[in-house]
Image (tube, rainbow over all chains, first blue to last red; front, side, top):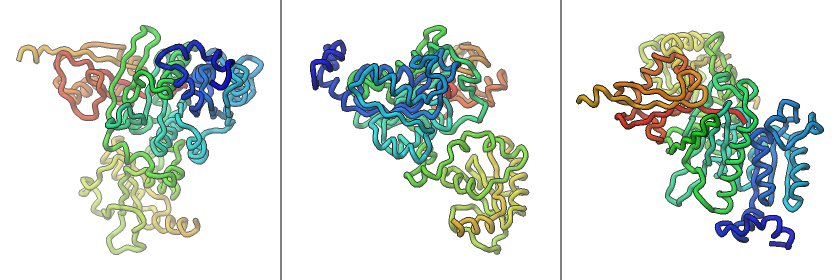
Length: 379
Length: 82
């Protein structure tokens, strides 16, 4: 310990044989990034700051509102309208001036995620939406960072530790091994829509802080490859064992360049999930993002003699005239048809939607390969 | 064979799924998870529109799994709240 004051501050946890001075030093050297300074983020931040985690980053672009105060217990009425990240940093500094707290008053994006995550050892997901959760998961897999995950719904919570091996021979599991793809927009309600009892994120966030301290100090058994489900109404805890899925890896961008191309908001939006309702046309950018995301069958519905040839991306050649007889060639749950100018592919999309119903998502490339090639040249 | 014919197993539901079907109940005479899910979707059509993960005896499964009388099956949806 650097001084007697420090020792005194952490004395009650240093005297635990499992922690000791060595464990406290590990905490002081640890760098933890907390994403979301809301219901889950507040208790995580309070306990990690109090416990002496040496460097804590806080990412949140939101401001404090009156209806946050019943569960986001760091803030008071004087903070309403102020940046959560900045207010949290200021309040936590008063709690523990010996540690470094860095507020990032920004929304997490694919760009800043790569920069921020590089600076920290452990990432904590206390966000309130699926698009950011999938973005955080994929970035953690890509950058091999342990991820402490927590999420809540009304009176229930889930906690897990992803991307962490307890033993050298273990396989790592991530959020996509549990839920490979995001649910449709509106399918799962958030706290704003479904309501939440204020104490629930307090319990789940405190569990997340506990998991983080275990990861840093190496004590106990972190929830790696496990999902803990807690029900505050009947106090039942249900703990599941997770396994890696083979198909998961193809859903996660392979490298940083592919990650930067991802549009997570779009991935979780209802436009994508109900495309066939009105028009199923997508533009070149969306088309490129779908290909980058993988798990998509692209179908050239032109006749074999037509040019330009499409060699820039993998595609299956089934002319429109033979489409209905050859649907067995289509394996993925997402299909994009293209032709020369986008007319025949729209017909193809309608035919395929009729055959597959809601089981597959079917799109047509607007403007066809001609427009796509034009766009490619201008980029 | 008698025990198979009268097999009863426990199903636990979490989150929104519990709002649809209740926290827990027993189901009779289902040999595997595919058949169980079919039965549940027929009884509670709203389940068919919801994403969830299936666990048998606390192990998350990704393919059809045989069930017996001692099996406890849990269905958990994703949560987004924070």
